[in-house]
Length: 295
Image 1 (cartoon, rainbow, N blue to C red):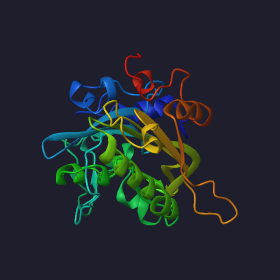
Image 2 (image 1 turned 90 degrees about the vertical axis):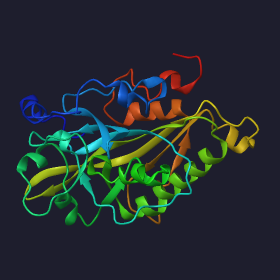
Image 3 (image 1 turned 120 degrees about the vertical axis):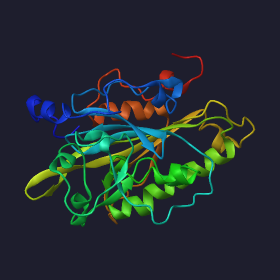
Image 4 (image 1 turned 180 degrees about the vertical axis):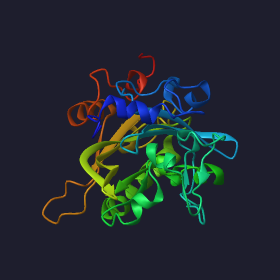
């Protein structure tokens, strides 16, 4: 990811403060959101931490978070059939698990007034987005892919958020999220596992002359549903048991439509990401690329 060239000492200073449910190895509680209970491979760096995203006494989904770039590398969740409703009056939250000054492992609303600097060391805060006029908060696990109110509310944490251009977020990515929601609603009969992540661009949001939040170049997503409707129309059936897509996180350019979503196979997305971001050659999103019986 961008800015990983920062010194190993700096990374250690940041990550040594991490406590609670943030850890290098995944607990069994968080593996329920992963196909074959296995996270994507080939993403390793001292600045990365798994977060079991907890809200109202339950684990809701999993995030791999970069504590230096202050963005999620990906969020992994299980899709819940829904009509796509959105929440109202849900406050943005932060992750106490990334703080040494917290005795809770559940996301919390941002406090008003003074916030100890320790909160900002390892994660983004609301002030990072206040004057970032070119970007808005875009969620990797969208509330439209959840059904229960608490599952929807749990998506409102900045550890599930990356900077997206308004045009891309509202015109392009939200539209694709709705397409996937309808497809899985109609044709996935079992559990659909989704992983949505980013590649970084080298651009960064700065605040008070400090690098604060890395800006993604591409947003990508892949789903895996091995129990699906074999009688679905071919135009949809060939997109099972898995499919993927990615989009360029830029404002619309009338002379170029490169920020439209590209739908591809999971295998093609895997090769695309190997060429466009810092992943190991053993990078894999799903076990066996979500081919049943393949390890």
